[in-house]
Every structure is written in structure tokens, then in C-alpha cells.
Amino acid sequence: MIKGEALNHVFDIGKPGQFHAIKDINITFNSGELYGILGPSGCGKSTLLYLLSGLRRPTSGKVLFDDINIGELNDKELSSFRMKNFGFIFQRHFLVNYLSALDNVLVPVDKEANKYRELAQEMLCDLGLKELMNKKPYEISGGQRQRVAIARALINRPKVIFADEPTASLDHQNAQSVMNFLSKYKKNSTVIVVTHDEAILNKDYEKIHIWDGKLKDGDE
Ligand SMILES: Nc1ncnc2c1ncn2[C@@H]1O[C@H](COP(=O)(O)OP(=O)(O)O)[C@@H](O)[C@H]1O
Ligand SMILES: [Mg+2]
Image (cartoon, rainbow, N blue to C red):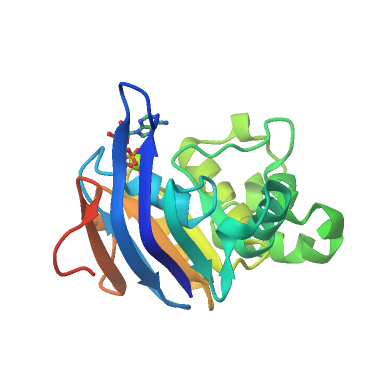
């Protein structure tokens, strides 16, 4: 379970251009469920995802993962906590350009790469990338790169998968295959997808609407 309590985030606090992006959000995500965070561009979706996943520290409020208050971890502890428990998928893929698709998938499990190699190959096959495993990111298409990034996010079976506009740069067919794969491999993970496009979320997703930094009525 992951929980945000009285979350607030103010960018550039104390400066003339300060901006209150997340306003008193209380929210709980249960294990093994799928969630979609929806709302127009600029409403605070990405900021909320960053706060929940410990990529950004809130100005005030708490993020609890099971019973751990992640705000109490120092930067080093937080980063190893994230590596162990969370998987990230972004709109841009951030693959390592000089590594093959297969080696990119193995980056998060670096030290035990051999143990995970077969699983990585299986995932890439499942994603339709069997023939492309040894290609470098710049030798494959944008949709293929995003599928590699998804296999990388899921390789160490994270407890929570955070995806920020994972299909925004993909055509409809690639978007669908990415979302299907996410559902298939989630196992017991909680999946939290931020999107401005409700059409990519099937009926299994619980939908959470954000408006101007707040949860819309009825979502709390
Ligand atoms: N690093 C930042 N510094 C200042 N303002 C920011 C920063 N990041 C986001 N914002 C502002 O916070 C608001 C919410 O942004 P964001 O969470 O990225 O929205 P969304 O993902 O819903 O499009 C926007 O008005 C944006 O301009
Ligand atoms: Mg965003």
C-alpha cells in the first residue's frame, strides 16, 4: 500500500514566482491494483507522481509505503529504497545508447544480470522484440524503445510501477500493446499511470481525477 497524507508541493517557495502545484492531497493506493491519474496538462499529475515515488520531496505532508515514512529516509537510503521497490516508466525512455536492448533491460539488476537474463529475453520476446534484442536503442523505433523501457522497469518485479504518460509518444497500436503488457506483467504490483488520455485505461483501472493541484470531488 502506498499512501499520501496531506501532501502539498510549492515550487520556488518564497520566491516571487512561487507556485502551489499540489494542494492537500490525501490518497491511498492498494497493492495489486491499477490506477489512472487523469487531468488536463499542468494540473499537477507528474508532480504528484514524483512526490509519491520519492523522486521529489513534498513541501509538506507524508508519503507512506506500507509502514515506512519515506520522507524519513536520507537521499542515499531513499534511492536504494526506490531501486528495490519501485519501477519507473517515463514518456521519454532514457535508455543507455551504447547498450543493447537486452543489456538495457538488465541495468536495474546489474549485479545479478545472469540470474535475470532468461526473464529479460522472455519479456522482450513477449513484447515482439525477439529479433531486436541485440540492437542498440538508436537502431530501433520509438515504440520499440518504449517497450524495452517497460521491460527494464518490470525486470526486478517492483512493488509499485509508476508510469508518467507512458504512451504519449506512441501511435494507437503501440500504445495498446504497451498497456496490455503492463497489465500482464504487473503480477502483484500496484500500477499507477499518469495520463491525459483516458482512452488508454481499460475498465480495470480505478480513475483518479486531478484538477488545479487537487483531487476532484468524489475521488477522496
Ligand atoms: N520544476 C518546476 N518549477 C516550477 N513550476 C513547475 C515545475 N514543475 C512543474 N511546475 C508547474 O506545476 C504545475 C503542475 O505541473 P505538472 O505536475 O508537470 O503537471 P501535469 O503533469 O499535470 O501536466 C504546472 O503549472 C507547472 O508549470
Ligand atoms: Mg506531466
